[in-house]
Length: 305
Image (cartoon, rainbow, N blue to C red; front, side, top):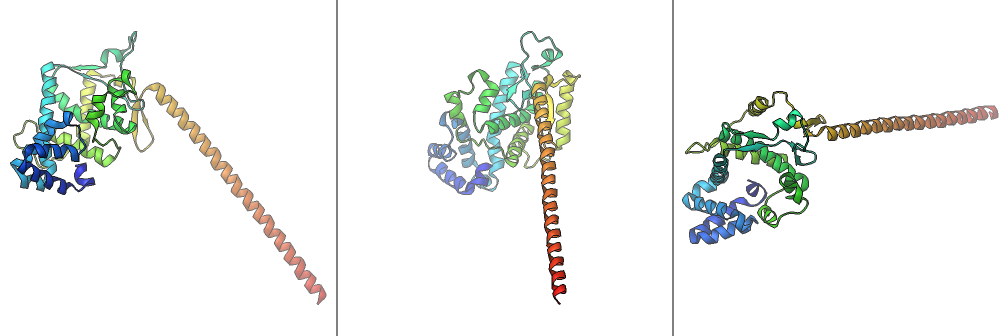
């Protein structure tokens, strides 16, 4: 989608289609080059895209996002199959300020330790499909905050941070790491479209989502295994515009900084007000002096007459 928005997407598609008709392998290489993607990591996805270009060129040109989502659909099925085969998934909560998953420390006998990470065993495919968009949102945020793969490395493999494994650097080449609300929402929505259509032979052209319903569904699941709403000890910090979840220690530090900032702003405002009043007093004194001088001159002129 970013390709179509930010670059001359239609020209790219027409070039790919032309190359696909001549030589599919050439088209595959062209796609990877134009998108600056690593061949080893994205070869299968690129080949799938080229095959769909050949299958229905007119449809791809008229609605490329819809057709490209079919490739994502195939990848999503493969990934979900891994979860189904393992019969287990672990749900971690993330400290969004520090970019780290919450992992109970040794010797921690609190309720949090017994709850998180939460092992998902029942209704595994459905739960994973419901949570994946939120996982993707977290990954996009962490990549955006670090402007690249370091955020993801820290999130998954803190011990290696800030070193970036060469294979990870290659896999991320060509991906956007910018934090743009519209792009993030668009990417997550596309993933939701794909996940909701996995059981359908014909993907829907347009799906309408109820944001509150989606969130309440996830909250209900959390409350089923975390009735005390401990959320791994994370606290929500908000500024009236947005919010994040972080540890209690970090939340208290942020609150202290915010209070100090508020006090400083109040002091600065008061000092500014004093300065304004002082300038007014000086101006009044100047005007009073000017009036006295004017009166003196008028009286002097009248005396001469």
